[in-house]
Image (cartoon, rainbow, N blue to C red):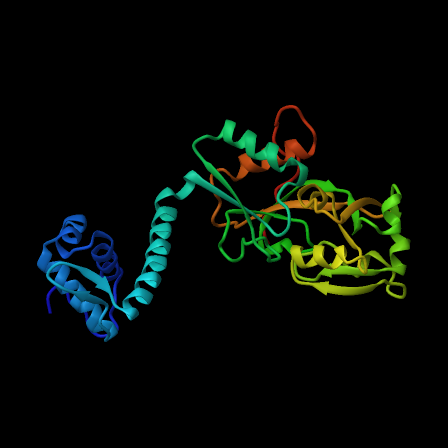
Length: 306
């Protein structure tokens, strides 16, 4: 078998690229020109693809080429697969010229926009991307990011981490809730309400109250589900001030929670796969949380997993 052939089931990305090129250019000749191969190679590659899938993908005449019904479906799927493969190549090629910072609900809260602006000014050669991923590690464990902002209670022993700041807690409630007219809510008052809690990525746990005296709870699945439950007026929620800064919604207001410890905010990363911009990101975030005019770097201690 020559280099353009394929056994049944041995489909390759080049076969899909050939199919897409034929359809997009409208002919085998133009596809060959685009792919930089001979017209005969294009024909053999398409034949190999059809043989691999055991279906006919194109209607071919001397003047036109058009996908069959099955071909339309295969073509759509091929475009998705090729786009994913191209993105994979870009990620590997770009390497450290792009920094992904993950978070479950909110990135740096009210500091997010300023973080993005300063990063662009100070590190123009490293593109910043903030990624929301509804997992305890904000996508770090799933390989979605290089660093992650973590607020939820989490065992950090598996990760290198640094404390970048603290955030006060807020009570989220419907805008027509009687509490909405108040300037603050005490922690013990929440005992009389039903509390919406995201058990996977939320920062609130029942450990805020004594074991014998805790509020009723309703579990939600993510930030949108949590906000929807609170907007009904039948639930309230406790959350860091970052949520209030980044999720201002009609029908929901936030009020300070009194008599409760603030929420620690950590940046975490993989110990054996440290992005070169990690310490720059930590310095910038810590400087913003501490309200400094200039970033002098974090004074906190870096912690590596034991």
